[in-house]
Image (cartoon, rainbow over all chains, first blue to last red; front, side, top):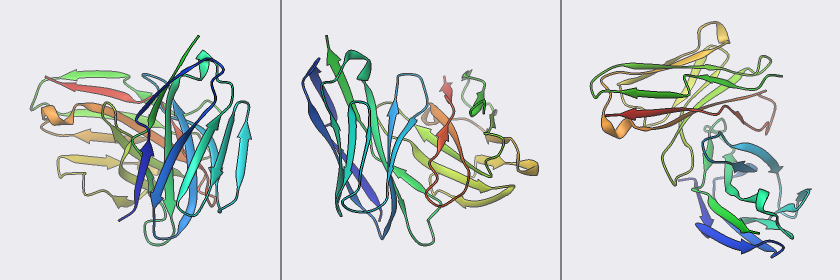
Length: 112
Length: 114
């Protein structure tokens, strides 16, 4: 069964302290891996799509990378406004290609 | 592009009552998804439409849940005989349907069943 596991569940950093969030996945053929940001009381906001191992995408202080088993979301010199829950999701090939499965997310808190 | 719109934003209902939520997707998107999210968890897939056809339903979707998308435009999600366990955020998302196109989410309807 397709599965997505994110770690850590929660992460507290000081402003400017760089770190990484992990997303491990098990899927029968990866079609795409997605990263989303979710603020309290709002729907997830799309950040990146990664398609194949070795691929990297960047946006401001965020960089997403992908291997055959996991993805990392690196955050460089974070600011308090980067505080949010970061969700990873995968889309598999095959009969359930339409379904996108989410992990439980990492709650990131940046202290000023 | 006005984004995905969901109504109402909040709904409080008594156990046993029926509720209906509405989702208006991004206008040119032909795929529409419903997800459910509880506190501290990621969104759980419920069902998916391509235009007006409901192509996949999760095993989570009991027979008390029904979704429609008449004419391939807006969608409704109805929950009959609500239970306290139905309390959650119900999220709607749409996508263009091209390969690997990302989901664009609305801000959800928060349901509280008392």
